[in-house]
Length: 582
Image (tube, rainbow, N blue to C red; front, top):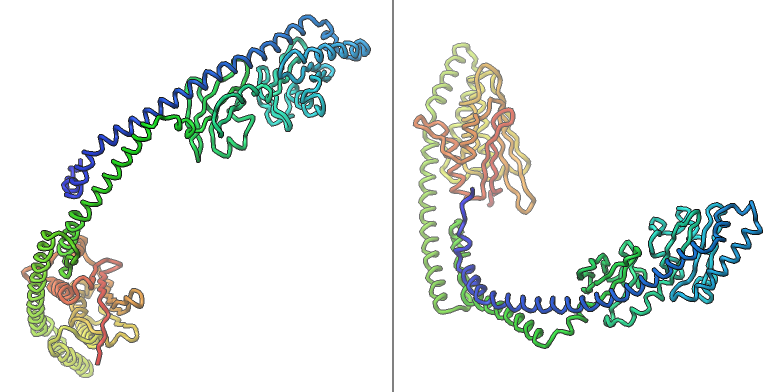
């Protein structure tokens, strides 16, 4: 388990803010809780009041609809003429038509006794005949063909309206283009008997409810969709899926309180939608004072944090920021001179003075290291590898025995040029063309020693010959490859490529040295990537150590050297691109 990191919580910044917060937060929390509790109490009171009214109105509506159902049951039981409608009209067409007229007259006469009722109907499946009896002067008295088609489609079970999937064995909403109805269909014997009630007239008494300017009393179908004011409901994102014993807040732009009551005899319900801001307007003046106090406390908290930040935390942050930069090696960092308290001004001046002295001390140490490095480089140039010198003389001896005078001359010329470049004037930098020439002479000399086993290529992009680099950094890696990779068992190729990398504004010199040998071992590669010193008592890998140290002293973090394997060892050096001037 990861140990607990207390660094963040030990910060003065956090402690001061936490202290102020712990003082003010309980009071603010209590005020806010009290205000929300009061709001909830008011909402509950409004919801309970409207819920009682909806229960009353729903009871009245259910009673009216139940009276219509009782009439239809009584009508079905007493009217013997219905038997003729159950049978085919072909057996006795005159009697069928006579009974049909009588039943139509009876139903039409009774429509006037039921408020809100618009029509009765009887459907005979055997004769595919709908007896439709609308109330005189009602909304279905004229242009009722769509209603009749919808009823026939529902009875047949076909898709005659968009809500044909709704079951009408209970009272349910039948939406029509001009007028919505509450419809109930009962199957009695071989007939379907039902009635349609005008939804607008059913909702008439609910208009007396005081729901505010934006409040609505709605008839809701079995899918919790509004029958009236659909544009208002959908436009405000109001969800009418309520619970009968509770209220809910819904809406996207404004909060609306929704209360509802389901019908006991039908798949519909009544809903009241009340704007929340209308409800909260009824809160007493004290609640607004509480809101003001809570808001004021929060503003005081913010002002206190701002004051502490300007007076204490920002000066401390400037000091901490400068200290972090110095810890990362950026000794040029200083605390900016800003207006602050006397104590912080003294601390800033003292800190900047100490950092200036530390920077000068580091510069002196750095110059001393450069002088030491120059001495090491001079010693490296003067210390000719005795094995290399003796091996070269040995090759000359055997060539003389075999009287290969042309090769002796060529080898001697390479040795002369190699040692001339090796003993050149001691500087921190050398021209790239001289370094490549030195390396080529060295590899050419080694080629005489390993005839047929060593090959090499040295290439450089145009315009890079006058670049300056630290001396011997290329030849040191070539020497390391000869020592560890070249043998007489199989040929080895060394490729030295000089190019550039990066964008034009930040272009750098890229030196890649690769061979076709066995590459670095995993242990050696891991140590090289970690920057470990591989030099031992026998002086092995001293060239790599020397190159790394010089690059760090001369370029700091601007130079990069990486080691990898790719069908042999690969060394990549990225250096700042400097060219000789003058």
